[in-house]
Image (cartoon, rainbow over all chains, first blue to last red; front, side, top):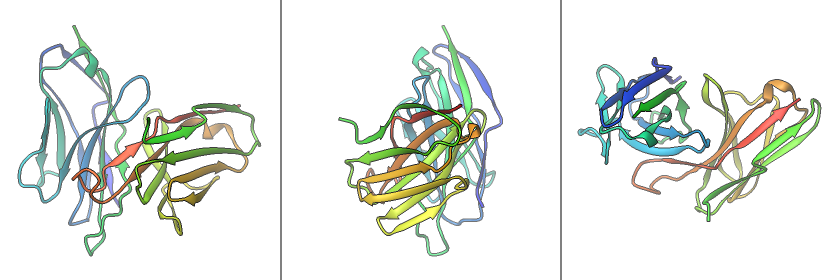
Amino acid sequence: AQKITQTQPGMFVQEKEAVTLDCTYDTSDQSYGLFWYKQPSSGEMIFLIYQGSYDEQNATEGRYSLNFQKARKSANLVISASQLGDSAMYFCAMRGANAGGTSYGKLTFGQGTILTVHP
Amino acid sequence: DADVTQTPRNRITKTGKRIMLECSQTKGHDRMYWYRQDPGLGLRLIYYSFDVKDINKGEISDGYSVSRQAQAKFSLSLESAIPNQTALYFCATSDLHSSGRTYEQFFGPGTRLTVL
């Protein structure tokens, strides 16, 4: 079974500052992938960043980076230079794979963190 | 045009009614999923389908059924709706190498369902 834990129900940050959203995971799969999605108040799910369990480097996508610490089973999202438009709910999610390495495809989500960016 | 569409976008129904939520995709993906989102619980998987002949239960399938009419269409039914099925429902699709990120999921806009 897989589990994702996001321990921060809400986070606040000043505009232009950096913020880290925490995510820890638990899995027995050897191969897995970690995703972050953003959900603005309009409700759609927007993909932000992906990290594969065998990727040696931390993933980056523009202002988003993923601080992947495999031994600690953490995959924290770092948003640099926060903008007012970053205010949203953020979800960490994981997909696993079977013993043969074939991905299950389906995702397990954390509870989410609401980020509020202050001007 | 949206790649993953859901109809209806909003629906209010009464306890005991049968309701169907529909999902269509133009991405050509084999894999499709239905999730529900409740406040404080994130998204939870209801059913998923790896191709037209392969349908699997997810974490919370009780009270739901699905139909994969074609590669592009995956419908979710509530046979007899109850108030605790009030939620935001998402359809999603994925494929192995659609974007270089293995099995990235692409979500529809969501259907907000209220059961009175």
